[in-house]
Length: 165
Ligand SMILES: *[C@@H]1O[C@H](CO)[C@@H](O)[C@H](O)[C@H]1NC(C)=O
Ligand SMILES: *[C@@H]1O[C@H](CO)[C@@H](O)[C@H](O)[C@H]1NC(C)=O
Ligand SMILES: *[C@@H]1O[C@H](CO)[C@@H](O)[C@H](O)[C@H]1NC(C)=O
Image (tube, rainbow, N blue to C red; front, side, top):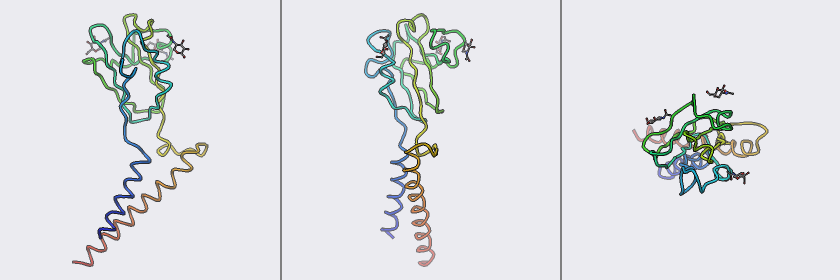
């Protein structure tokens, strides 16, 4: 029974490891959300953000804010008619719920000084099966095997319980 239980745990762990758990990305790294010193294009290029991850904006709310805008507004630094106002206390988080590019800027002219960021968000390879993707074709079978193992392990466990009763 102990063996069965540990096999179930191992199966579960391999699923978790493949799918991954949400990551918190501090926008701009340790410098945060500020109107100098950080090139957010470079910052974003070396981050790998997946659906379910969170972005954290750290800033002085007396001067700056965080607004989600569309691509056009991002490119031209338009802070009118934004999509969402992420601004709260200056240590603000927002979850990436879709596989697309998210655009943020700081209004009040700071966008023109570089306070804008485009964050491409990818689906987890194992959650977005697509024949053209190397990852999904190689990882999916292992996820499915793990699931089958969990089911088998649980059935064996239940059968053991029934036999004991
Ligand atoms: C940020 O870095 C990118 C790529 O290195 C560069 O093209 C861009 O001009 C830089 N932006 C600023 C505001 O320096
Ligand atoms: C982007 O947002 C601006 C401001 O709300 C709006 O005028 C514009 O039509 C939008 N562009 C697209 C492509 O949705
Ligand atoms: C965004 O929300 C904050 C906090 O609720 C508020 O103080 C600020 O005025 C809002 N900014 C805009 C541009 O609506």
